[in-house]
Image (cartoon, rainbow, N blue to C red):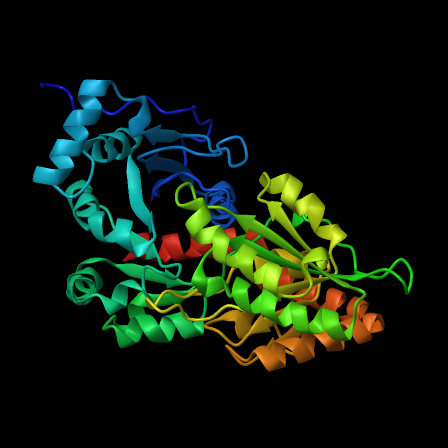
Length: 400
């Protein structure tokens, strides 16, 4: 199968050929919830991003100048790639060929599981590697003895690790990573795409519309949100709960069924609406329909956690929506308690109910939360600002 390792041509050509190239290894590129990765790639100005990925999703929502995917290889070449990865080096050979062809100066791996496989890719290319951890790749995987052993090599041989906040930084260091190798790099949201509108009731008779959004996963706490809302609605019938859920590709009934049963048992089923996930811009446009965002995140039974914090919280604050969030992981670093929203103890359903009722009773406070939330996001989570900070991290890595 001579020549089968040849990389495909890029998905599109870049006009920034004079800039240093950073390879971004991520799979897939990108799920519907992948706006936070796209912001890191699309926001670069002093570096030219080149994406290598196994498969492509939602490219219309998350365009990128130069992308190489295994999907565009011939059938024999795809087979070669799979066998070479299984029996040879732990990465697809076309990754190496594509990044060598583009002259990559460094490699940015997204998620620890892919980053671990990329160690030898960076070494074979002779370039430094930086990995972004996002949640399950640290919290859940650290429950596995095999992964804990891998971290020993990972932290020794890779150059730098980015985390979303200080709770996650502490967790990574507890697993054995030297403190000088762990850098807090806040994720950013595209503020120019997120309209700001402080929330208000059109009339005192309008219902307070709470929103929950995200993938259907135990760590998101959707079940707690439904139970809490049932209690809130009994005390204040002028309330409504919207669940904007990203359904899995498989086992939909197995995952969604328990939530539907909770809704039926809540006593407030008529005031609960399920929404399917939308393309990113439609999702941003829809936010203005809701008043208060709920983020009751928690540690899952298998150890999974947010990381980090859901980027949805940042988007909500940027849009002018107050947030009620648990004290889970780095959520309190994103939601400033009493200023941009309210933070309640992780897993405390009574406290969540109290916070929801407090917001429903005092809509006159919403504009203050909205102004503070937008200002905080502009200072710490602006995608453009964070892209400049990411470039400075790249500069320092190349200067070593």
